[in-house]
Amino acid sequence: MSRSLELTAKNVVVLLLGAEPREVFEYVDGVRTNTVRLFDDGRSLWRISAAVEVDGQAVGACSVLTCTPEAVKGQPMGTRLVAHDATVKVSPDSQYEVRVTVTAPTLAPEKRQAAS
Image (tube, rainbow, N blue to C red):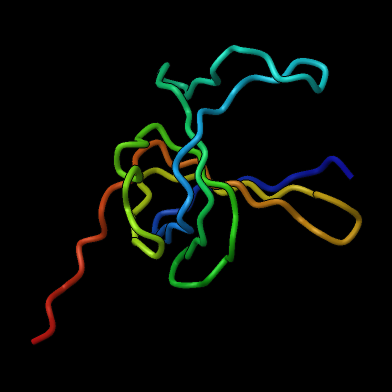
């Protein structure tokens, strides 16, 4: 049951669910340490709860890990952000459920086209 699927996604939109970002910490033998988890480039990772769309398809609520918490702080629920260079990981959470985690090093406000 420990298999997971991980893929790179180009068109990922994150819809904030209202919680402020929290730092992500390393775990050793199932116990949280005081060591902040880092992205590949050495920046700290932060976790937010969000609903996610990949290529226009709703994935639903999941965890999003990002290095840009400033893009999220103080934003209202429902704010849409674009995830750059995102990786989507799906892994078993129980016998009948999966856990989806999106790692998006950079989140930025979505640029919406004006109605004509």
